[in-house]
Image 1 (cartoon, rainbow, N blue to C red):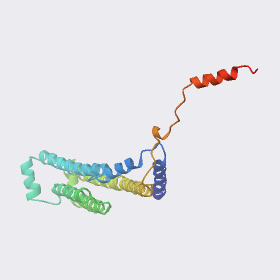
Image 2: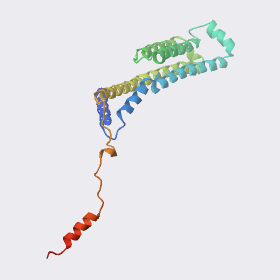
Image 3: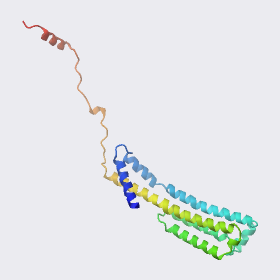
Image 4: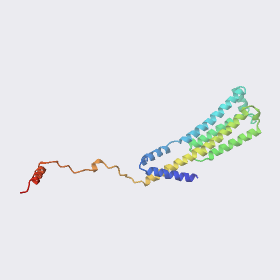
Length: 226
């Protein structure tokens, strides 16, 4: 189904290029080259912003949990220096930092066009959160024992959906359209005949109407024959 849609879109693009009322071919090529020269596409930038939001939101929830539990300094010593897998939320924060670093490095710095990086981060996050909820005692620590694991789980799957169903397919469509336009431009003639100028059409100079010789000829013809 995707290949059929791509072929229909390519034919539509080719017809648009060849039509008289369409945008000039050079303008289309320049616009697509401008898109290709961007560091990242708009959808990929949105994905990176969402990954950043994931880290900041989990950090905010963790800080709120530290304040509610009895002060930031005391709880930091308890959860970080005296880390306990069964009672600490510090590992959920570290997991968010790991997702942010891995995804930004893969899809913003290296501009990867494959889903394997986010598949790894999603699998690690999902497995860790499920194991932590089953083994640890977070559910007995109030609302944050439910909120932090559930929020992390939802955000990581939203990132997967956004990349796999929005970013990568749209970038593939844009690349195919650019290659189609480029191949058509290579087959097009180098010189396109321009519009005819007014100088190419001319008419002989008009003679002076009703000149003296014409009047004499007319007068001779009107004389009666004797």
